[in-house]
Image (cartoon, rainbow, N blue to C red; front, side, top):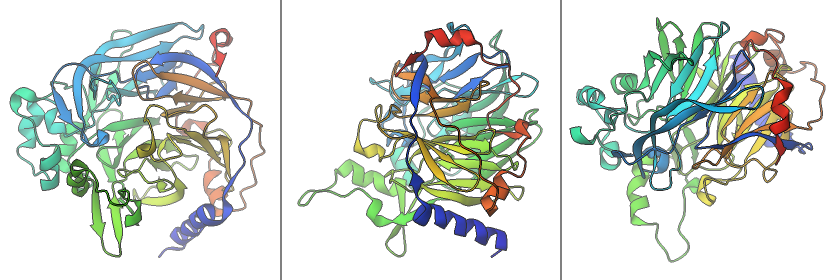
Length: 468
């Protein structure tokens, strides 16, 4: 074992078993925009406008079972868009009638437009999701999928569709360069086709591109369906997929039935396709990576949600350096959906929920925001029950404040909130290995995850804000 790896492992143990998390600071959440369906990523453009991905609510088209919804069908429609909030507070929708899949009739858990980010020149790049077997996307991918193997357990629960039942949604599971004025899309990378041919994690053949980060000439995409992180040149000239390993946990995390009762037969049937029994009374759970951020040290940091049965306190953050090997950097989180770094080198970790999603209504689970300082101290900035519900995305605005996609599940349920009232903390000296790592390149703000060269957010955005 290399000394560097040993040091990181020891540090992670310190965080989870000894160091703990300090008390939450007083904060308020100021609503910037609401009424967004299955709201996802948020980012600021060069002109200070806020852009929010709206995957939509699907429609009455063809359907496919999805592992993202424990195999409840997602049905296709044209209900997605990109919500733009101008510096004066005006809300408009771009890329309207975009392809979308979601549960029906609830319209929950939509996939479609997932994220929008800008490069240093102001060019816009659009990421679209999918949440299913990519062979079901359209007839072309169905034909391609027929040439490559699919695990037997997958065929039982979410198999290939018949040719007349494909979703006909070729715009999904792609990375595009997008012209926001004309709506024209130039495909850079097709995650659906890549997953079919390569299956980077060697597990189920499924893709759901979830989060986009741009640094320099490279796009970093986290695929929650394919359990992989991608490095893709913005000109499409090169790409690399890095598989994120499964989580090994005690079998006690599996859902248990009350005394004298049995688990529902449909759940028992699905279990083999969701978790793998391993020796020693343990199970292997799919990672389901969700958020990505490029740190001050130039490495990619990836947070995970963890798959079914969605255990609490089991989510990890991986660091992927120049060797392109994911190492566990931090652990002990629950349902991470996004992360980013601020200008002081603090890592901000957004938790969709502090409890298993099996324990409540997925549209209204108590989420939280945790700050990890360069010396490893964890501070809960917004605690569960203080207004973050099923939170789904984070960004640092041009004003230096934190913006969060809140209530990210459900039709017209989503909003963007600004975190106000935080107490400014002095960044500790880098007296630990983590501090040295995190502060290695402080000042090179162009390398920060979701910070772009942007103009300051106009003060005219503030009059329409409200405290929630």
